[in-house]
Length: 154
Image (cartoon, rainbow, N blue to C red; front, side, top):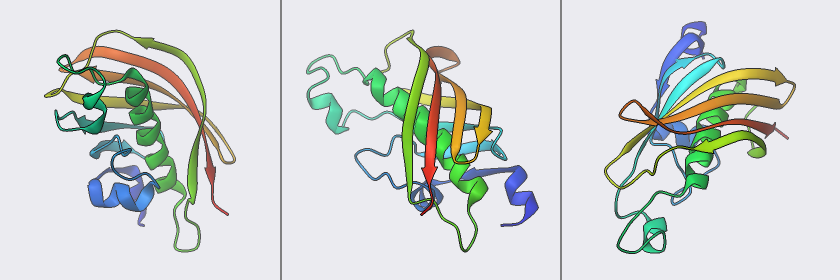
């Protein structure tokens, strides 16, 4: 990866599948845009009515589960961490969600919405990373949290 790729960029679904161990139906990010190294990024999730969680959450009144919004934040942050440390010899084997703090849900998310996961790095030590995230739909804050993750490369 060249230095330019590390500064600004995007990650489409093919790149996300390379970076993250998650797969459907648990991959909560469709694309990452506006990547600035491991400092910040924006992940996109298009919420569709045919997703399996809507069968039970809730029949007749589908609401995207808040815990999956937070998972989308964690996956967005995890992908840029993996992207930052990836070399030909070193690849992330797992990304473990370690902490969640200051989590608040502000507004329901429903099918047809597009969630923007806006993530900013707070700190990084060895294999541990901490981010502050906001989830927005049409510019309106729907959830926020501080999350921590650990990357396993062995």
